[in-house]
Length: 242
Image (cartoon, rainbow, N blue to C red; front, side, top):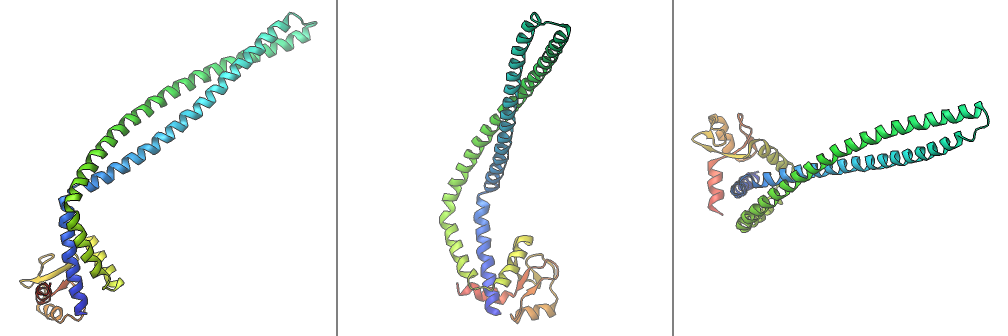
């Protein structure tokens, strides 16, 4: 267990170095990530809006074709009015004319509505396009900045990641999982005893517990912050052999 505690302490040291390296990048990684997410969402919105416009174009074109068909029929019916032989035929053609005229009127109104809605949708799509262009420009700028900082820290980052990999392969998966869970919630997962207190939260550790921690025979969690606590002696001994 003592070896495991040493490895956990070393892992925290390496992760702290990696945190420092990440800190040099500031909010650039998060900014780049958020911009990519926002752009992806807008791309999806633009695609949906374009599909909406395409459907309206198809519907508008059908309405336009239907209007032309009814206008052709109207022309034909009106010519036939002069050729009817009785009132029955005249009434039948009159009804067809009235239906065609009403259909043209309705379809013309629908056509105008489609045109208006398409105009609105096209304006919205144009606004999305303008916003996308601006966001892509921001993304390129921030990505370039991040690339410069990443290049400056690349060697150091590779070094610590290599060290981390060597430590991780020697740790039990369950223990590593506990470490990761604490680190996610607390930032740092391993603390030492400093002036009889937990270096992670500053709360006093009872003398009896300090004696238990110094035995290095089990993983001890701070009763206040939940971090893994190792003795100062173990930390110093581990540092001295590095």
